[in-house]
Every structure is written in structure tokens, then in C-alpha cells.
Image 1 (cartoon, rainbow, N blue to C red):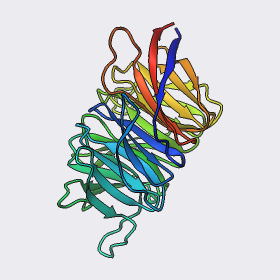
Image 2: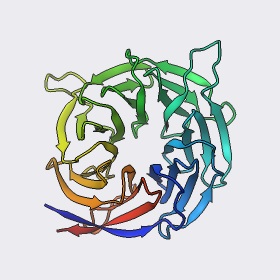
Image 3: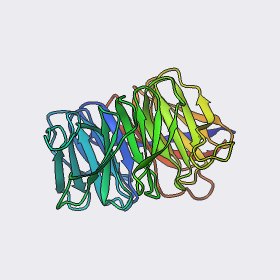
Length: 323
């Protein structure tokens, strides 16, 4: 099987530097962050900017949205974490994670993820742990828990499961850690990659986790059971085909397809059942962000997605159906 994805439109006001993250929200809007220090909210239909924050002096490196699409969480290069109201446009909270508190062992945040209900957020960085913070505007940034990975390797990416019960974190050395948020403990460690894991994506039912790595591969994990019946199976499939680092990934809302953006200047669409690439889209530079439209596709369409990368342009793509 092959699928065709057509270029729908570009964002009307490109970022002045690389786009380092994109998120298509449940309210059918798109949020993008850039190395130029800006964060923008886009109308997904017109490609027009509807909200924007003044440029931060340093790059914005991480972005996530809550389950309602009402608030975005983003993090800057030095570790300033902010909560942005996507309706009103105001910043509801700021946390300077790089400020050392002598009473507690903190670390500058690199990657951040807000919980689906928006009550807390997770952050990871230099120590290789996951720290849980309050996302309540009245107490934003206050530390709630530290989830140790047991390894002092840089935390590259973290992401909550859609059901809100777990958070996954990946490291510069290729390990992936799954934490139980209620029990505040490590559930599983996967050693699926030989190099840094740049991005993670959960399936909507929170049963599958897809990882994207500098080893040019994506690995699909079933987080429920292993062949022996024990929780935490590790890899159940490997997706190969990129010629360079895989920088970004996402799983479609119906769980059938996956996206990957790469330093080889392509986006690949993968059929997860067939374990094969079914479409390749050529981009103009490295692809640092990809995100499916959360609304399930209709009338047999494979869906729509948004991408962002080295040239600063946010692009929308739509599926043309089965080929």
C-alpha cells in the first residue's frame, strides 16, 4: 500500500529561524516554537497567526498542549518554563528552572510535557530524572515529585501518556524510561536504541509508544506485556528507512499510521500494522517537528498533519487517500 500526502498550505508568517516543535491542538489550532525565541498559535485552516508571544532572547526548544487545547506549555534553551493561555493569549505562569534552590536539588528543564488534565507538568534535563511540577497558575513550577531513572544521562524528551497515568522519558544514550505517576516509580526501562532518542509519541489508547532516534530508526513498544507475560515488553517493531537522524515523531489518532521527521530532509508516513513506510514527503531542510491533526479522519482519508523545520516555515499536509 502507498499513500499520497499533498501540500495544503504554508503558515503566512514564517519564523525567522528553525521551528523546533509543533503541536496540533484538540481545538484545531496549531502551536509552533522556534529557535528565534517565539511561540505562535495558528489558524489551521487559513495558516494565519492568531496569537504570538514576544521573542525570548534564546530559543524555545520544547512545547506541549493540554488535553483540552486550552493551554500550551513551553520551555526555553536555558530552562524558563511558561504556561500560555491559548484563548486569552496571556502567560499564566513562569518557572525559572535554572535558578538553583539550596533546599532542593533541581535542574534546568530541557523537555517539558503538561499532563492531559493540565494539573501538573513533567520536565527532564541534565540529571536524567523526571521532575513533576505544579501547573496551577497559583503555584506554577512548584516541585511535586522527582522520578529517578537511575542513570545520569541527559534527558532528551518527556511525554505524558494520553490517559495521564504514566510519563515516558528518553535519554542521550538511547534508553527509554516509563514512570507510574500515581506510584511515583519506574515501571520499565527499554534499551531499544544505540544513540540519543530525540522524540516520543504515545498511541491514543496509551498502549503503544514510538521512539525516534539518532540511530536513524524508530522503535515501536507495547507497554502492556512482554512475551513472558511481564509488564514492559520493549521493542515489538523497528521502522528503518531514514538516511539520517530521526528528530520527531507522532502517531495518528486512529493508531494506524505514524509520522517521522528527519535530518535527511524528509517526512515519512508509516503503516504501523504493516511495519512499513507508505509515503515519503520531501522537505527543504531538517524536520524538527511533526504532529497529526487530533480529529480522526473521515471518508477513508489517511488524515492531516503539520510539520516544521530548518527553514522556519510551518506547513500543512493533507492525505489524498489510498493509492
